[in-house]
Length: 328
Image (cartoon, rainbow, N blue to C red):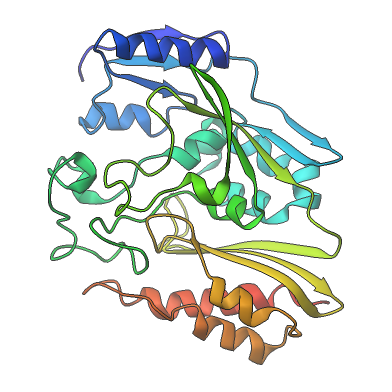
């Protein structure tokens, strides 16, 4: 493992200014909040950073606050803090479930909200040093190679899947991301934070080089809103979603007045199922309606040679998630 320079930041502003200065000097900086993935990438050689801007010394952006307009979550809040927070569990149960589904207790105690959403893809070609699209090359080796865990929606020129469990939930809740950079702060809707490879084959989000995700604001859900996050894995723990379904439904009795259904594990970004949402609007949640929602969920999917198993998985997961939010 190569030698690294560590810079302890005192605040979010200090961190982004430090990163900008490092880059002005021709070096490569990386922010480290929990470091559960970053340091492994540096060790493996898939992250070129030679300067670590350490965020563990930053005291701000760790709190979770409930207000009249919603719940504010610091980007440095750990996943354990999110899943245990009483306001999150009461008002945003899907978010608590998603945070609890990540990794192991040891990982959740360290991993941060911002880190979970900005972690790099886990494609084995990218992670093992192939000169692929994600690494700045000109080919996605998964197209004709091992693609069992790759995208069935939104793929090309890269077929990675976004690894975050909490990202689709925040898209479903229409959260606002507050980004901090050396030139100040800006706000981006969660749905606009993530970008497809056809837009940017190297980066998975809109963060500039010296920006970081400082805070997430989740608006208060309307009354009679129910939500869940359901995750299918290829083993019981320690792994990412084969399929994840974030479902947020507003009910009038048992009839759907509004729905958001967003997938993880199937696309390079959190994948919103607008056709399913439109289908559910105005309908009572019954077993038949849930089954049809599951069927609609895979319309337009384009599986590769070895990931067709994700089609019935997705359909069944959406059906289960929708029916699980029926009244009673």
